[in-house]
Every structure is written in C-alpha cells, then in structure tokens.
Length: 202
Length: 311
Image (cartoon, rainbow over all chains, first blue to last red):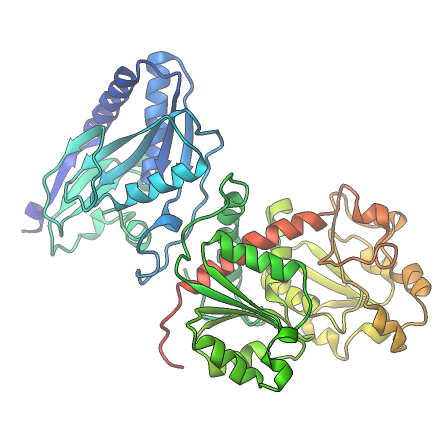
C-alpha cells in the first residue's frame, strides 16, 4: 500500500535536465547573462541557484553572482507558527539596483514565500526586473504569483507533501510526492526533519 | 532549538546551546544593520516598553534602534517626568502601562530583582537591561558575540575582567556567559572592589594586574565609578591608574592577537589609556554595533514565546 502513495516525480537525471533547461530559458529570455544575478531562497533554493549559475557559466562562460536569502523575517506567519523559525544568514553581497534578478526556489506552492522574498529584495534596492525560477510548481496559489521558469509542474492535492532532496543537504537526488495521510518509511525521511522544522516548504 | 524562558532576566543557568542560538541569530541580524534599508517587518504590530529607571545612553538607544529595526512600536518611559514623582508604585506603573497593550518590556533599575518582580505582576516578556549590581545579560551576550566574531570560538580563551568587580553587573553576566561557553575566566581589581566569596564562581581572582594579564587573550575593562573613590574604596584616582590602568606597556603581557574591550562609558586616562582605547586591538565601537544585532536577536527569539503554560 505504502509504495503506491509515495511517487517519485523526478530522479537525479530528471533534476539535472530540468536545471539545464531552465538555465537555457533564462539566457534566451534575457538575451545573455550580462545583467543577471541569481538569488536563491534558503535552503534548497540556494543550492539550485548555485547549480544554475554553474550551468550558465558552462554555456556563456560568464560568472554569475549568486546571493542567498533567508525569508523567515519577512513571513506573514512568523508569530503563528508553533516553532519559531531559526534565522539564517542572508548574503546578498552585490548591488541589486538595475539588475535582472532571477529568484530561485525549490517548490512553488502558496506563493507566500515568494511574496516575502520579493519584499526583502525591494528593501535592498530597485532591481530592473525580478523573475522567478522554481524546480517544482505544485499549484494551490494563495497569492497572484506565477513562475517564469518551471522545472516540472506536478498536480497535487493541497494536503500532499512535495519533498525535494538534493545532494548538497541530503546526500541524494530525488523529488517525491507523499500523498496526504501517509507516514513515511524511515528510508525516505532522511533530511525531512530539517524541512518541517523550518516551517515548511513542503 | 528555542530559548527555555520567555524572559531574559540574566545569564545565570543559561546553557551553551541557548547562548549559541542567540549568537547565531545575532549573526543574521548583524547583516541587516549593514543594509541600505536597515529594517525588517518581523515584529510589526508588537509594542515594546523601554522602562529605564537609571540613566543610559548606549543600552537605551541600542534597544530602541533594535526594536525599530524589527518594526516594533516603542514607548520610552522616563521616571523623572512621570507619575512616579507623585508616588505611584512600580507595580502600579507597569500594570497601568501594560493595560495599554504592551507586548514586551525592557527594564533597567537600580534595585536587584526588579525584572524578576515584573514577571510576577505582568504578562509581557521581560528583558533585563541591568538591575543593580546583579546582571546585564545583553551586554554580556554582545561581549560574547564580539569575541566569537573575532576568534570564531570562545572555548578555552583566557578572558580577564579588570576593574570594579564588586559593583559591576556586566562582570556577573559575563562570568556566567563565559563559563557556560567554556572560556577560562579571571577577575582583577583592588581588594576593596572585589566582592566577598567571588572565588565561589570558580574563576581566578587577582589583585596584581600584571599577573592577571599574563597570557590572557581578552581584556574586558570595567569602568571605575568615581563616586567609589569618595566612598573610600581606593585612595586616589592616580593610584588606581598606576595599579590597575591598562597601558600600552602592559599589553606586552598579553597573548598575540589580544583584544581590548570596554562596555563604556570609558574614563580615558583612568582605567584605560587613550592609545589603548583607540588602538588596533580595541573593539569598543565594534561592541556597540554588535549590541544592536544581539538585542534584535533577543527581541526576536523572545517574541515567539507568548503563550507559555502557567508555571
């Protein structure tokens, strides 16, 4: 029974292909990489941003600046969560003014994380544009936000959980959908604790 | 990981994990105060009362800026222009202010235990900004933060606290905090300014400055309050400076890569020589900047702890 309810939607190769395609699409839409900077949302969005930067370097030979951002201080539910999120360091060591910013996250769900990220970026200055790249779009938006680049669209029900596991944090590469009401077998939950504690990108 | 208490009354009994959480969080806030817009919306809608019964420049402004940078609303209370003059008690004063819907109180008072007393009569989170000669936890936390930023660790560093140990709340909070983090702690001052049974803290006690400084990494210099001399606790300012003043010559006794700290306000030429206060190893102004980040971290971490089961 349990096997049917955890579905692997992207494997290692699938993730790599999605990131490669997103990188090409970013370059195509922005006519090159000269004005681009990437900002990844911690934790896994930051890892994906670094991979996109590497890919773009491979394609165009240009080093793209990558910033890391913790959005927890800008959350709209920071005081309603039972566990207060641990604040990590935001590192945007460049001027965002007049740049074309590619905001990167792993899973796009309600859009509230992206709203927080947009507010935070605007506090750093006035970029020329902000575009959104996500590995997974699972739907169920609660705010008028849409991605510009999507690795894979996955139809989910609202109570499902989407788990992105990346080499950097988890030691393996996989995107899984866990159907609502499922308890995860121990072999699959490696790294999951970290995510739920942070208040959930699932 | 969370703090255990919803108040910050002192560092006595605090664990290394809790201090590390505060310092790690402060590291994130330290970045925010370098931004062009030094403000995040985190405490929007919260109201913080700054209840300062004693004069303060650094701590009060530092707390107020920390609150504002987290988007909290702030109210400052000054006893000299309030109904305290008409004889209103402390309990009535804070209960009346709290009736206007306050979420957190930052308190400084000349009497030991006032922050604890407040936790017994009001609902707000209480942060101790100095109570008598008892504790000044945010000052010690910013000292720890400044040390950790420079050395990347605190454990096994030799830290010497010099000066008026007896009347200093900064010293007490520093001892608890440094010991929790595994530093080696010593205090040094004239015997009249060392409290009775100070050695019960499990620290080294010196009345000879040169012995105390030998092999130390960090020197944290406490202000000598001149009214203490009038009370006859040391014969003259000049003698104090000769015996306990930190001068360039004495710095040679310290380990390489030493650090000079002072919580301020400093008496130049008394407990610290001018060129030491302004020297390359002095982090006195760095401490002030870090204080804001540490106070933001404390406000943030306590703000999440509203409803606690009744004790």
